[in-house]
Image (cartoon, rainbow, N blue to C red; front, top):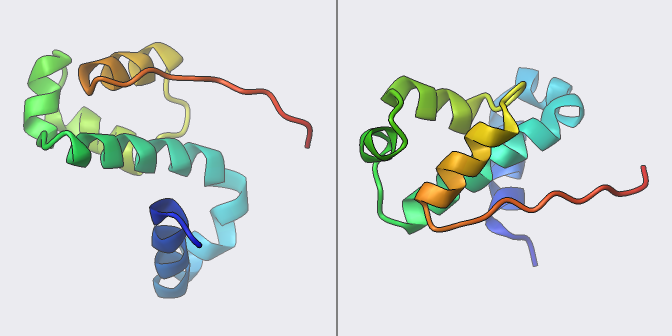
Length: 94
């Protein structure tokens, strides 16, 4: 059974050929953004409200959710904590 992230990726790959082409290279960055967006939505918090909580701008939250490449781990952690979550890092063999 596919999870929400996998379903979203499948739909987006079908709809956006440029996204599909570069998908593998940017998957992990994208996945972080999707997970943060899902956590925010599950918490019932708007981007604007999250921006106020984390003392940043709504546009920064949007960029984080949609283009998470080169994001600081401290930023991801701060946003996750504001949503009642923690960040766990795992190193795996490729």
